[in-house]
Every structure is written in structure tokens, then in C-alpha cells.
Length: 202
Image (cartoon, rainbow, N blue to C red):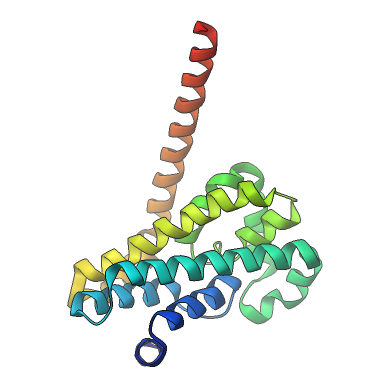
């Protein structure tokens, strides 16, 4: 897989990053975190620009998540259930994401990129649930930026050891996402409480 990614970057550069991530977010079998971390490794080697790599990755993630929303909005859940298994989107993953979205919709859009198998589904589920696109874009695009910066920066920092990220993802991702989710909910309630206090004072 590393050879394919290297070929992609060598021949298509930043455009290759963008189109690969569009495909990966939509659901094609592309190892997105591995791609982003390898991009960071290329930044470490001086082959790619850090800022341009982040911009390209962000545009790709943003394009992929928007396309997924459009597909979900236009064709709905039946199409996803019919063709999903062909791009590794199983009924079990769909049902799990639907339950999560009902409870933590905005947070899932923001942090779902860090959960393999979930980031491919959040936009479809959001569209099926008629989640407003403007609100969707605020959370999903912010998440795309955080996700892109995180893994490209990790690859840049780790350098020659960039491949260790894949092991950490599979081992610790559930703990990381749980911590981020709890922190986000806590921040939200503190912000809401602060606004209520302001209203009471005024």
C-alpha cells in the first residue's frame, strides 16, 4: 500500500492528496490515516510543503464529506444499504452510526473522522436524518481540518517512525475518541450554562 501512496504523491502531488481523500471519505478502501501520516513524513523529508499538504488534505476531506452528504440526501438510506457492502459499509456499521448520531450528531460529525468505519457514514446518516447542511458543514468541515492537521503533523514529527501511527490508531483510537467526546460534551454544557447565567443576570 505504501508503494501505491508513494506513486500517487510522486505523480499527482497535492491534487493526488485531494482526490484520494475524496474517495476515501466517500467509502473507497483507501487507508486515510496512513495516507495523511505518510504525507507528513514527506513533509519531514522536505518533499512537500506543510501548509499546502494540509490545505490539499482539508479540501479533499471537505469534498468527500460533502459528496457523501449529497448522495445521502438525493438517494437516501436504501441505496446505502444496497451498495454499501461493496465499499465496506455494512448494515451493522450503518445501524451503529445511526444510534450514535441520534445521541451525539454534531459531535460525531466533528470527531467521527478519528473513528475508522464511522467517518465514512456520518454524512450519509446526517443527510438521511435531514440534518441542515449549513449546520452540518460547520461541524464536518471543522472536523476535517482538525483531522488533517493531526495526522499530517504526526507524520512530520515522527519522521522515519511514521508507520507506528497505524499501530497506535488500532490500539488506542477508542480511548482517544471517548476522551474527546466527553471533553466536547463537557465544554458544550459549560458554554450553555454560561449563556443561561448571562441571561439571568441581564
